[in-house]
Length: 199
Image (tube, rainbow, N blue to C red; front, side, top):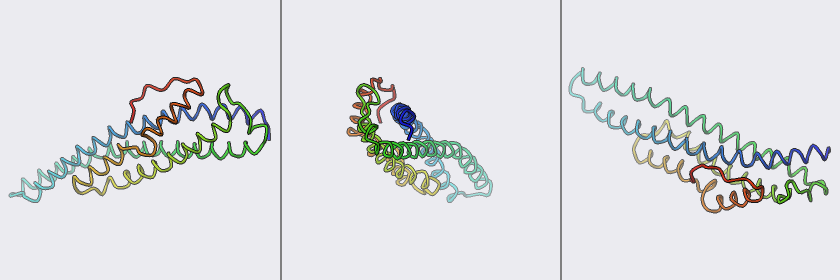
């Protein structure tokens, strides 16, 4: 194993952890915007579909069907956005798992196991952070994937509220424990916390 190359890769990993965490937060927040659009359009769809059932004339039926088609067309954009966001979250999750695997291999070497990546960051601390993030991202990603998969089959406002909550509430990659871990990590690597709204 080339030790210098491994040390350089550890520096890159320590920086990538922050970039990925910031991109994850932006993805969740952008997803919240898309989810609100999906909710608004779906509520209009549910209301319009009820009008379809109560249409008295052929003309009223045609107008209502046209409105439903327009709403379905409008729905495609935020659905595509949320799908793209899930792909980004997938890349972050997979990248974190890859970094964890690489670092675990590096730490089999005694020299690298005691290596200080930065003046305050030991390689073993980075390993702990990556283990934590990999577990949390994986669990949160499963929730977000379920939301995205269920979006097209929602048939009532209760289901809609449920998927909205599942996207918004980030109990795995959010919350106090996650925030504390990230705050501590940012202090260790002497990096300012990003200006991203808390989840």
